Every structure is written in structure tokens, then in C-alpha cells.
Image 1 (cartoon, rainbow, N blue to C red):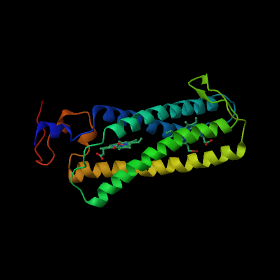
Image 2: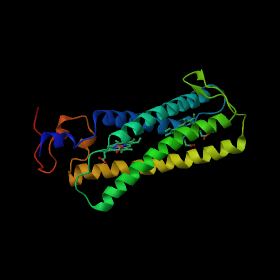
Image 3: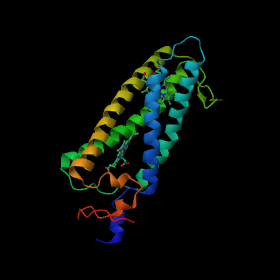
Image 4: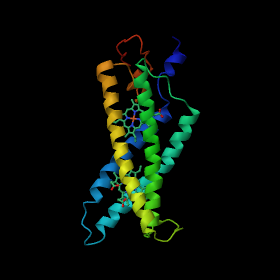
Length: 197
Ligand code: HEM
Ligand code: HEM
């Protein structure tokens, strides 16, 4: 194999950077979303601050996801290492679910907040208001937000379990494709040990 095809074995640096940046932010966002609801409503202040932080972080995920999806459409990922067809299909479908869930969560979260009637703030900056309070729509958006957060969690659990299986059981180099390591450029088919650099 040529060295050119070796470099095609992994995701681009940009895709890797965006994957891990978004992974960290999303995991923090989910944990924060759960935690913030445990904060007592009285005295007011701490709960509102925590909700505002969740909203700001969630709003940040939207442009990150738009950038990531645009990059992804222009840079197709490398082909999967050899695996049963159902496994490749499941991995791709699960990636699709995560992409969709992240857009639904960030856009739906914003809509729910706008319909709540409270001003939506982005790290302190009050965003323009375009709607009056709409309790029925707010409730609908909250239900969608809750259901989608569970869908994302299930997809994430499957994603991490699948990645662990490929890394630890199949040892097919799949995880290396998403790591910022020069070892990822090693041809996968030979099962050669990584060369120290
Ligand atoms: C410890 C946690 C994680 C590990 C070990 C991990 C690992 C990986 C690996 C190895 C790939 C490449 C799979 C392949 O080549 O097909 C991948 C792709 C992907 N991961 Fe993760 N990931 C993690 C967390 C996350 C999180 C939190 C998200 C969502 C926010 C996420 C979303 C995705 C998506 C959407 C892809 C597909 C990328 C594409 O083809 O565009 N991952 N991940
Ligand atoms: C990818 C981005 C996001 C993720 C992963 C996420 C995740 C979560 C999670 C796990 C919860 C707790 C479960 C629940 O009750 O729904 C939650 C609640 C909440 N989130 Fe998000 N969220 C995101 C974006 C947003 C955005 C952009 C906003 C608003 C601008 C927002 C507003 C809220 C609010 C107000 C709640 C409290 C429950 C409710 O009233 O619906 N979220 N979020």
C-alpha cells in the first residue's frame, strides 16, 4: 500500500479535533442538564444561573455541529476496517442518530426556552425575543428535549461500547482513526505493532 492510502485510513485532523471537542462539551452538557434541575427554586439565582449556563453551552453546540457537518459532507470518512455488514450499518446509523439528536437538542432547547417567555441569554448577552410565552409549545419542546436526551444517551452508550469492542476485542484500529496519533497512519491489515517515534 502506498503511504497516500495509509493517510486515508484515519479521519482528518479537523474531524478529530471537532469530534473530541464536541464529545467533551456534550458530556458536560448532559451532566449539567441533569444536575441543574436538582437545584432548589428558592432562593432564586443559583438555579437561573445554572440554567443560563446550560443554555449558553447548548447554543454553542449548534454552530460547532454546523461546522462539523459541513466539514463531514466535504470530507467523507475513511472506509471502515473489515467487519460484518450489519456492524458497519449499525455504526453508521448510530452516528446518524447522534448527529440528528444533537441538532434537535440544540435547536429544540432554544425554541423551548424562547417559548417559556423568559429572555434567552448567551453567556450574559440577551438574545432578541421573537415570540410571546407559549406554554403548550414550551411543554412540547421540553418533552422532545427530554426524550431526545435519552435517545442520545442510548446512542452514546452503544457508540462507546462498540468502540471499546473494536479496540479491545477485534483490535482492528478503528479507535486509532479517531485519535490524534501518528500511530493511526500504520496500515491496519498487517497487525504490525506500532513503531515508536
Ligand atoms: C469516550 C467517548 C468516545 C469514544 C471512545 C469515541 C470514539 C469514536 C470513534 C473511534 C469514532 C470513529 C468511528 C468510525 O471510524 O466509524 C467515532 C465517530 C463518531 N463519534 Fe465518537 N467517541 C466518543 C464520544 C462521542 C460523543 C460524546 C459523541 C457525540 C457527541 C460522539 C459522536 C461521534 C460521531 C457522530 C461519529 C461519526 C463521525 C463521522 O463519521 O462523521 N462520539 N467516535
Ligand atoms: C446538544 C445540546 C444539549 C444537550 C445535550 C442538552 C441536554 C439536556 C439534558 C440531559 C437535560 C435534562 C433532561 C431534561 O429534563 O430534558 C436538559 C434540560 C434542559 N435543557 Fe438542554 N441540552 C442541550 C441544549 C439546550 C439548549 C440550547 C437549551 C436552551 C437554549 C436547553 C435548555 C434546557 C432546559 C430549559 C432544560 C430543563 C428542562 C426543560 O425545561 O426542558 N438545552 N438538557
